[in-house]
Length: 87
Image (cartoon, rainbow, N blue to C red):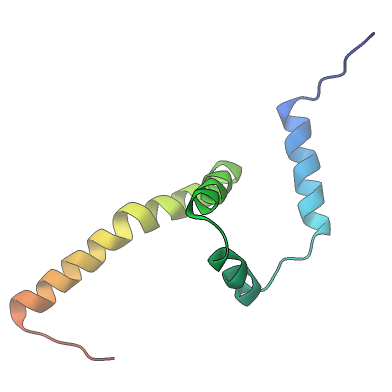
């Protein structure tokens, strides 16, 4: 009996062809679905996205580690100089 094993490259190509057929959900629909998803499952989805494409990994890195630092620096400056912005 011969067992056929597909390579990772074949699996990725098959996965991408499935995504080309699928129609993407709207942001509103994704938001609704994420609100009903557990934190553990959301974490797994984020990690899968990061593994899938380098740009996803870079964006996740920025959002997790750098965007908050920039906001904290801006907030610190606002508090330090007494500048308040109401929006």
